[in-house]
Image (cartoon, rainbow, N blue to C red; front, side):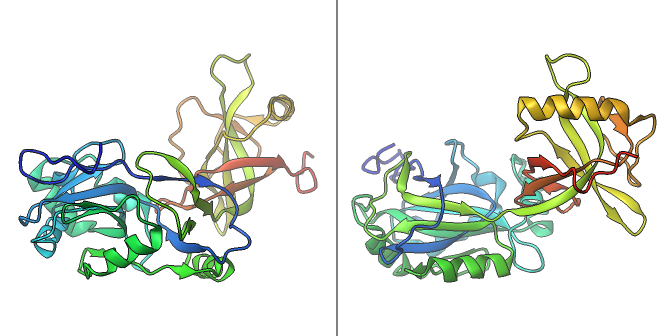
Length: 322
């Protein structure tokens, strides 16, 4: 939607959020700003300045009833017709975004249940852009000017904030993200306009990933493939009590690797799971925990599972078949 239209209440229309392209940190970086990348749900905030507001998801759905603790932001913005861009997150005890906690909130529209969950798993709105302010579209303005306008709104509250950005020092921003356990960095060109709904090279996201050596303890059949070809492997990590289940890895495998895995897994099959904790995976086939694989993942979930795991390679140097 364009920022020049208003609905029946007089509130400005939501604006489709601008998207970033994946890529490395820009070098040189003097003309770039660097923000932390938060692991949450994108949200566009619109208000006519009458004390009410509307929260819209990236898909264009109205999620206002889902997050009642954010409604008070309407009072803070009273007197301003505004469209804001941000991310809804749920923070853990260390102040890091935890997508698993946020998932407990998503899709809830029942007023009583949403209010109860807001107490148990409170949401926080990270605001990082303003696209419309007091009757004026700001999308054509450069990033620096939009951030200056955003800072003028003085948005700081119990459930919302405007984090600062780092100017021209991507390495320093990256070090801060890694040490803080955040998801990654978003680099934004200082001169970039806001392009609604488009994935722009003027915004670049770089995600932090963790590389691990995991032990394969099972697999699931690949749909539509010959019998014995894995669609995913079930992996774990050794702990004090034995092999602890860490999740299912199905992304990143080549056809050649799938063929090699099929040959290995056929040889080391077993009837019972090798994991010390329960694994609720339909159609699982179990194997002796001898094969070691290298995978990457963005983080760990609260349940102790790898989030967004991607297969990298089999580790024959660490694998024991005998």
